[in-house]
Image (cartoon, rainbow, N blue to C red; front, side, top):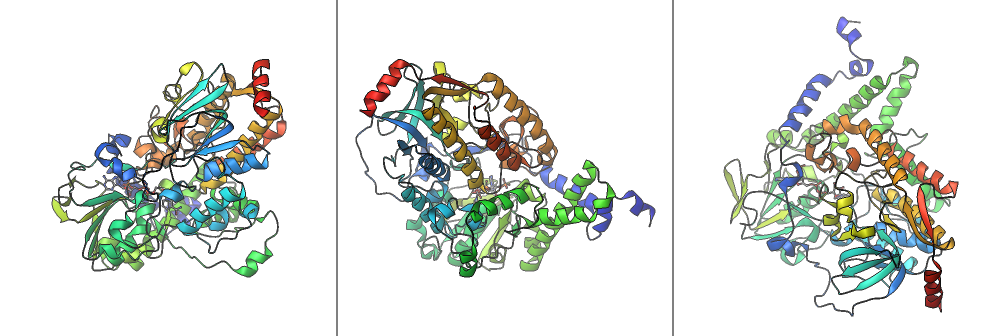
Length: 630
Ligand code: NDP
């Protein structure tokens, strides 16, 4: 053994095909050149002259209905998986009087709005799609396409009779707590002034499209739209592709995140020329998508779905399992890490050794991602530009088999902006590094607001007791118990990411939140409560715990290239608005969501709703309730 070997931690000496120090330095350089002082402020709200980017292309214009002024037991804002799961779990608990409100024309949320060509989910369908056993449905393939997920959303609504009493094409404008009546008053753009005893906010974490603040953004005179409202009238085709309207057209796509990765191959196949404007490359792993084996489907035993979801969630949360049921690009990094740590079992590893081993496993993974780029993309300069230099979970990993190959087409050009972003937009196209690219159509695949105020993203202000708004209550950072209950906001349940567990399969956590809120609401109804509200002490204790837990991830996110995961790189203490960082972050640390879900289960099992202040129903409101029942 050489002196160098002796000084090198064991895991690093195993990894001779790359130099960890050089990679660390490269990652730092790539991060630094993307850091910008304006952080989240670099993005532009979709409003004013861009407001039409939010129009609903899937409904007939002219919908009208009479305003509603009635009362329901539970009002759910949002008809995506959050609202559907809340509705389903409430119905299972025996709560009948439910109304769901959504601006869309049907259920589906994200999967209603996003119908761009190639739309699919790269989390395994047998894990991602909720309530499979309840619906009696087995997805057609390992990874579902968007149409199947939208159809499944609607199947959930039918199964649990959630279409009944739903208000579609209705945008909530304001919600206010009426202390005297102990009711939420929900006002909408349809003139409604509805009352609800309980309120569930399931507005989604990535629901509000955002635009890049590029100089000249409003100058472009060609056709343009945001990918989340695909304009098939212009492009032709459908979500399976065949974009015949793009023949003879020069098309630009700004953005190379998970959305762009799915649309680029379809545009490349149809447009006269496609320019992809890249700021940061995504990591693109393999996606093997076999059809579902009917024999496997037949072999599934009751309880299989929760078991598979838990297995996946544990693995992506770093909790060792005896088997890897999903066995794909999401789970292989942790599986190989566990294996390598098992080989070291006798070595008495310190936490630093484990961190180092995790980092080396990450380097290995990303080296294979970069090698894949080189093996597919023919032009060396383009291949180099498409290689991501950051740790795998700094940005959302992507999985696609045609994206990289699209850059081998003669009619497709990658315009790499060297981490700086597009320089300027003009009347006729896009400028990068002084060079103009003339375009007929410009598509923004630039993502969704994350670090902005909750109320702005939800589209309405929530006013709790004494008229205090949620925005004011959270002005110094998110305040909750379990990410769900906020002091000053009785009978209100947030299905939020902040201060709740994070998992790669978002519906998993929504399902757990739905079970939890259904329990609290049902118990409150059974106990004849007027109001249930978290105490200031319980809320403060939870915040302290979340901040302590977030500390464990702080280093990781600080070293990441900027993006919505780390508040666009602004991770300094006091920068509260990040998605996954600080007080506004998810319930972090070690096994994050696994621990979080365990805490919720234990809380329910305790039976007395610890940390909640409850107010029994007054005689007057009991009389009102009885009168309503008559
Ligand atoms: P993202 O926020 O992930 O990507 C936005 C893209 O726009 C990034 O590539 C970003 O670059 C780029 N961008 C922003 N500003 C500029 C600029 N000024 N110049 C050039 N480029 C710019 O949005 P997506 O819609 O792609 O994805 C959002 C989320 O939706 C995903 O993270 C994922 O959670 C989810 N999703 C999931 C899918 C699934 O399979 N389950 C499929 C699609 C989306 P930079 O990286 O440098 O910021």
